[in-house]
Length: 361
Image 1 (cartoon, rainbow, N blue to C red):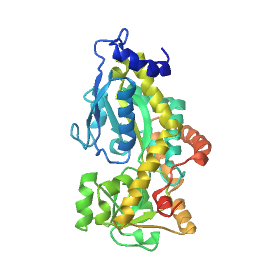
Image 2: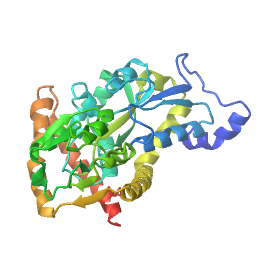
Image 3: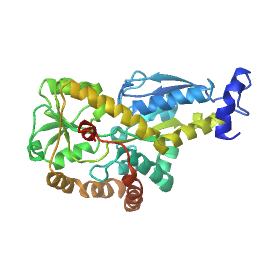
Image 4: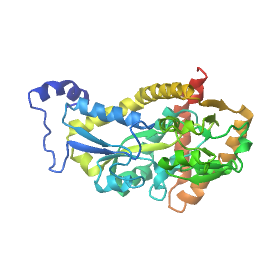
């Protein structure tokens, strides 16, 4: 049965009790756990909730989802092992928390290289299809099936006190995540690794001067603007490629019809639903942020260009030299594929940055 035929026929079959999978292995589950370390209002959660809700609808109840948000099933840093070992069936993985375990995937994480977050999602998809070591990292090493690539939209520089130039980052203690810590350091700040739940209190107490690498939606959802209301667009492009993956054994044990529905949903995200969902969410959060006192600002283009030059291509070259080469990964080839994908997709990106929405773009 073709995917779309299954979707159209599912309601009638389910009503008559005839919807069933042929030859499903005994270990296949129709009640699946989705396990996320962030809240259901965090950035990528808007995408994840749509996918999971549609999966239930389009399989007419053959698949039901139990969602565990905010690390209620596994703590931060435990999710990769959980999905690999089958403790969780589906989970969100942010590579910055697993830098030693996903060295190839880290080659997708950088700043100041492109403009649109929906384009980054497509870059990740294309490179995953083209670069075998990236697929092997997930499918072989971590026994995971890639449901879809996602991103953490955009990461403003969030400061307790206003700054008038990027030079004023020097000496400031700024929370970072993943390669965001590298950006902070290259721009003269002091990067402070810290888990998300600790950030608000650290800003409030003055332990931190600011935050970078915290996506806009999550920053507002976590109320960081109450203690750090100055949001700066530093021209860094999209933030935080991430992956929603499923235990491969469980995925392969589902019926072909259910697997096809999952693939169709991913295709819809890649075809524009991702940008549609995120643009709606970003608009709502910009409205909330403005009403609650957030000050949006950016810097002159020459200053943004100077910041870009401090970060790229040094950031990418550091991954090639310090991560890829020691691990036997052809980092230069992977980055060539990335460059091709950026050139293909970035000009067509449609996801607005919060500063653009705030300015009425």
